[in-house]
Image 1: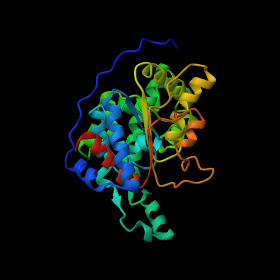
Image 2: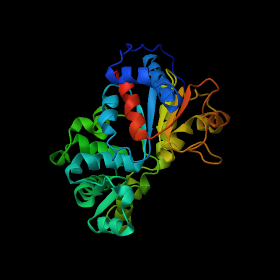
Image 3: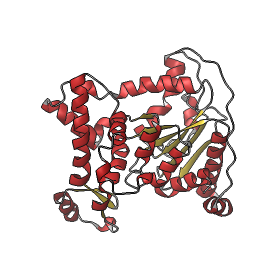
Image 4: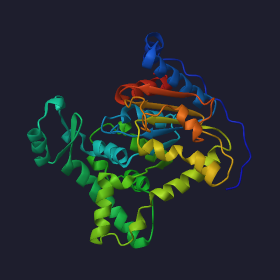
Length: 338
């Protein structure tokens, strides 16, 4: 990894606030609301000063249809890197091709174990208040990806999990099944932009399980046809190092878990393990309903990350203790000038 010459970055035009932004500016004055406004202002400032932003996507945000706003963030160059769980990677595509067969369960808190069992018998997998239909979603996507995996396996080619999804979307292999406005699919927007992505722990997703089964059955001869998590990390090390020669990268984390834990470690990996001087993350915001607690990483305050060499004492950092399905679209709307 050779250092490259630092260059000046062009500042973006400042966006005026639309009706959503004006509402937030006027009403969000204290507590989590004020933190949301501060985080949104700083997100916008980071982009305006030429920094990049990574979204860490945990939870079930794709099934919550975050793509309605996230896709536009990607198209408008407000997102430059995504760290996604395997579930969010696939579930945006499931929604794209099977939305009309989803079953909403508005009174999900009242379901009995028998009710849940009846949903299973109908091949409906529940995610809070909505059920994903196995046949129309999982199996439809599985068929296309299986074809791509086996083709790559025969040719001795290898790709990351998200690259196989990108290939399927770019080649229109699922287009006949689209059931939502394609502009509301963040994966489609990412594929069109060839957005850099890491998908740590992909193996525990539905499609990751399908791939493991295919390898076990001998349908895939080389288990490494789909590239691994360690390879994602080595790619991220190189990417982060190269980009931060010219600008900072901020981290906007939705939820907890591996989608955030995995990429934030790239800085101490560079500095402590590779002995390469590196910028720390230029911004950190986490939306989480995990309240501050002892021993919980998702509930750790950002200051703890300073001791691990991930953030600096002057890094803008925010914790919004709220439901991400409410908070994230508001922040995205503010950043977009809506």
